[in-house]
Amino acid sequence: MSQTARETARPQADGSPQQMNPKPESTRLSGKHRLVIAFTFFSMFFGAGNLIFPPLMGAQAQSAALPATIGFIVSAVGLPILGVLAVASAGGFEHLASRVSPKFAAVLAFVIIMAIGPCFAIPRTATTSYEMAVTPFAGENNRVALLIYSLVFFTLSFILSQHPEKLSKSLGRFMGPLLLVLIAVMFVACIFISHAPLGKPSGDFAHGSLIYGFINGYQTMDLLAALYFGIVISANISEFGVSDTKANRRETGIAGTGAGILLIIIYAALSFIGTVSGTIKSANGKNDTGATVLTNLTTSAFGSIGTAFVGLIFVLACFNVCTGLISTCATYFEENFPTVFGRPVKYQAWSIFFAVFSFIVSNAGLSAIITVSLPVLGALYPIAIVLVLLNLVEKPFTSKFPRVYFWTVLLVAVYTIFDCIVKLLAVLGLHMATVSGALAHLPLYQTQLTWLIPAAAGIVIGIIDSLIRKGHQTL
Image (cartoon, rainbow, N blue to C red; front, top):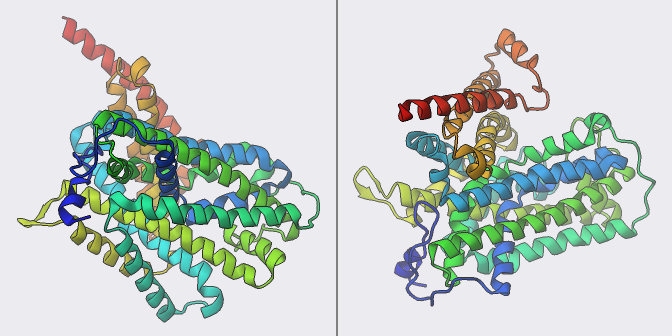
């Protein structure tokens, strides 16, 4: 496809596609194309975090793995898919966030894009896959190996991202299905490998597997990505000929649902793999992660080649997500920042910037990236959850009390941002013992759900504010 044709396939700022010149217009995708788009969506979601949490949860939950998996699926699949549907129905995330205020929508959109893009998520794809695929063979703290690996990783991802409207041809038809096949191999190995009976749940799962499964799914942070992945998915749907705005949004929602079904199946399989691995070797040590759980299983099933097998799965999953994120971020910036200092900046330039910036950040190492990213993502995620859930009850509730959006998001943001600042200062060595101690004593703080309290207060205040404003308008 020529550069001009590719640009016509680019979605607009609200996520809806522009008119496609070379494709005949249609109002729906064929069954085959819907499956390809669903695989594409799945591939963009399923990265290192999605691989790590379910098996570790299964290994620790053991006999309580079923309720833990249900809780995980509710938050790791339910919330992101609700996010996709909310954004599709609202006509874009900016439209959804504008129900709080237009300025707030612009600022939040920028912060989320930077968080799921070059600051945290994109660099983490390279460092995580490096840790799993290269470190076992190159050794710890090999800076030269990390430099070379990340350079190759981001170069290939950049090349593939140059046609975001055609990601369905690579991720949807090849990379996504290949990843599923590799995970299926591990699942089949678990069925035939001999192992001891499931043990008792350990750690947090010994005292409420359902809630801690939910919390584990909450930590995948897929909801933030879901708010913007629709931009790229919309372009791929348009490439198949569905350029009508309403029809395209409907197909985006269908694709999100299809990706959700795939995620549910894979999360259930990974949790089962974790339970079997946990009977082979305990996963309760401080340094145990989902990666070590998978390695324990594959080493037992395939010997030393098992380490390379798990490394391949991580590389494939992280590469898919990296490509999707570069495409998403570059598309967003081209639409919202078409000029910089008076000069036009096209998609290719933005994608180069994000690839190079992410390459530099990735060489800081995985530990540093995760340490800084967790407080920031922990501040953004509750805000996104509130926006999505309020949109879910738009017709019966929030449309009648529109100020609920403003007050609920405001109070949640005040709390989460304050908590984020305290944690970031601690990372820098500036510990605020008194403040940290006070926060730790708040209800639900240990389960990262304290934000529910300001959210409830915001709903009440928003209802009262809406009623007062309606009363003034009738006078």
